Length: 245
Image 1: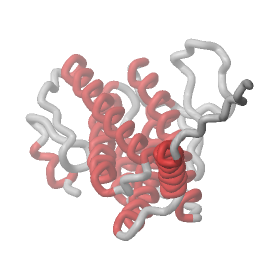
Image 2: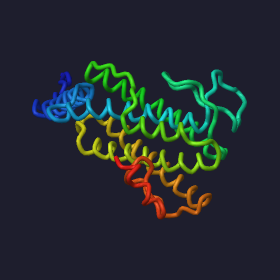
Image 3: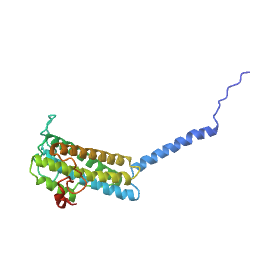
Image 4: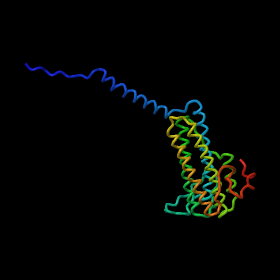
């Protein structure tokens, strides 16, 4: 007589070993996603709100700084490349003719202008998603003084020199803010960590690009963006009082 083959069931302990780790991983993943979309905790919450509003305002002043170099265009020119093309105008400011002389400066200004606009929008999104806050950009006191310095400068080679030093100093301030972000923001806000790391890297590279240009075009090879409105180099000590923070 043939025996009907019985279904062999794995031991219950095997199911447990397979099932509970999977459930634990799923729960951990859900918790991580939930935390990443939630506000920071404790001191990180306060820091992130202050950082995001500050970086928005900081980038806003860069829009005006860069459009003073490249000029503004009411309509965009589809021709590429076009070294004479300006930037989109910054809200609250009058249209501006390009004050820079070098095409390299104008190109850098257009690139920086686009990047700052994107970074403003990203910071605004973080504020809205995590803290339910809306923040409209405004010039900081430091940014206002830097803008005024460039608005009062004469167009041409001297403007190019002043612009590189002023924007380098502006970038350096963003580097310090981004460094604080990397060590003080919520650990689970990986998107903010990437955002701050991107600012840090891009601004340092921009500073060093301008330091190289200052050395090449103005024979200023020891420029440092560490203080004042526009940094310092040999021969600029007499300007320290006017540049003091």
